[in-house]
Length: 318
Image 1 (spheres, rainbow, N blue to C red):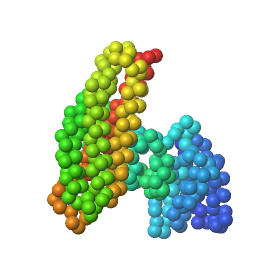
Image 2: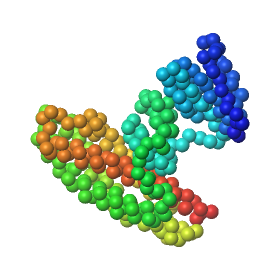
Image 3: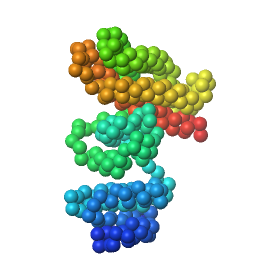
Image 4: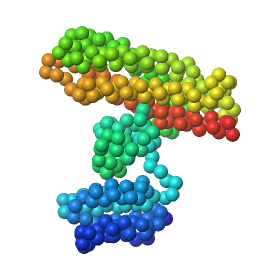
């Protein structure tokens, strides 16, 4: 339901003790889908957390103006059944927003099943700031986004293999070599490199086996799902539904994601020390590029390929 005219409350005209109670009364009077716009002389962020605590996650919060003299916020009551999207769902719809998640260290691929509120609470981040940047993401200059979500699943699976699996296979040997080399040369003065090398070797072992399972089992099954239409592929007899291999792949994604997160912490976001040599610099550059590529790689699988494969299989079972 949409309001016919803007519903405005200028709280600067109220006594301080009346402000929040009046806002709550006006909010409670809203029908689902209706909005209340409040005008204030300072950032009403404390109201956001009070409203969330006392009414729950039943509203959206949008800054229309932010100082220095006036703040305007539109508060909209959610429609019943309309839940917050997860990080993965948001990134799947608009990959530009993934840049904001990365900026704040929010994992939209391995940890993509969290909502923005849940992810920000876990990291102690200001959720109003993150949500505002997400709302403004469409204003950022960018090239036309690649429509991954519009592609057929067999095409997407081939794209992942030809683009991201190929990159992983080409990059991992160099990454392992330089991690070991730099650990030997600088581990005495920078002991974190010893742990980074161990984590890189673990990532190599995990991904090497992981890619084989996707290319030989899961992806062929998904492609057969697409080609067979309304019946299950013969491969289904060996592992039941597609959910079983997807659960395994997602668990392995999470293990690699945790290793990458630890490497980023140990390296202080890939910050080079003053005594870093050329190999040290190259290691961190390759590591940062590898992480960027893997985030997109896992996002395409966890948030687009896998959910759509599950939906196709569900339709086949009905």
